[in-house]
Image 1: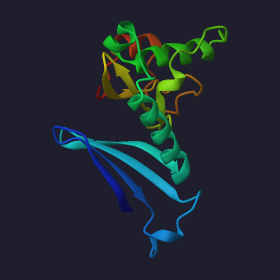
Image 2: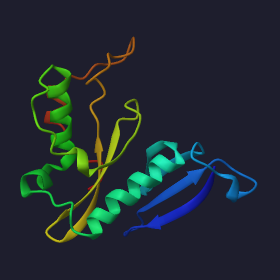
Image 3: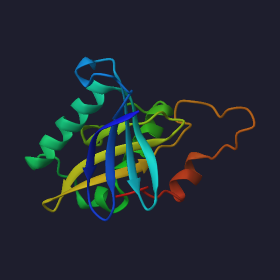
Image 4: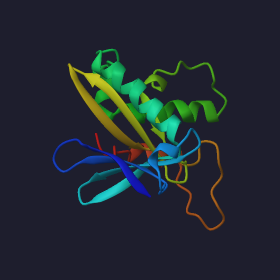
Length: 165
């Protein structure tokens, strides 16, 4: 993989955009693989692994709305993070309650494969822009693998913490 962009955030945190090693960078296209990694606290997590255009379009769309101040969240969502509310909404949908309004979707930038279980959000709160990385409950729409230790949604939610926020 080849780093095509490295966004330094603060306190040694950064986001790296990586594509498959190409001899000529001008030959990339819509279906070029893109990985996005987030480095923090001497470790990293993968935020995205899909097509180049999808990852970049989502990033630009959410970032532009944040710059314009159009991505404000309320204090209630800020305290535990928007990912906490999103997990609750996904759970309601998974048990058949589809009447609930999704207040989180517009803040979602990337959702990694559920086996990785990470979602990335960007929003404004009190005139600042925040990047939030949250865990995703793995069993909203899938059963545990054989010999995998199952964690109930209630246990997941009771010990919920943002990965970064």
